Length: 181
Image 1 (cartoon, rainbow, N blue to C red):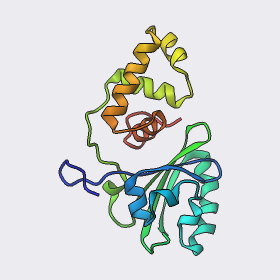
Image 2 (spheres, helix red, strand yellow; image 1 turned 120 degrees about the horizontal axis):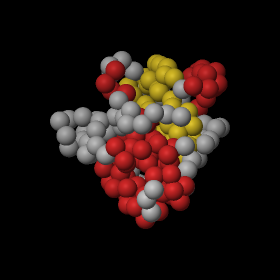
Image 3 (cartoon, one colour; image 1 turned 135 degrees about the vertical axis):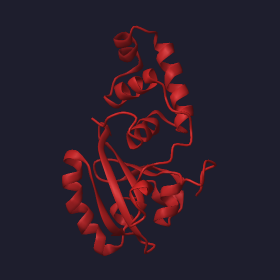
Image 4 (cartoon, helix red, strand yellow; image 1 turned 30 degrees about the vertical axis):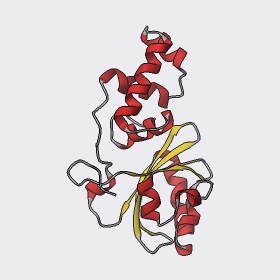
């Protein structure tokens, strides 16, 4: 799926829990995996790979859950070769998986920046959200009102093209806008 800016592709992102169950996936991830959006929600990441790849992913996942990492190629059910990059615990018990076509080059795994970049304050708030802080805790820490925090969150979601706070944090980490925890 091409983005409106210079033919770049949209990021193929999947949010999974500790058991590798897919909680949310971008349209690009569904396309790359060759599945419909309703098929991915609730499926395990393992089940979206060719049978011979599932054991390999389970083995790799132990290392990924400790400090993240990347691996490939892994074969999807549709027969495509994938590379994966895992950022563990973008939120407690939630992990970001960035998918790209194997051999597509380094830039293929870096999500395209289609929107305006978040401000320094918005990145700071995203980092605090990633650390599990509430709006009230963030407001107290930064000396602003909770309504101001909510405004910053709403603005950064728009800038990143995210529907949820978790998706905004995941996209910010994938785009190296904030450090993973």
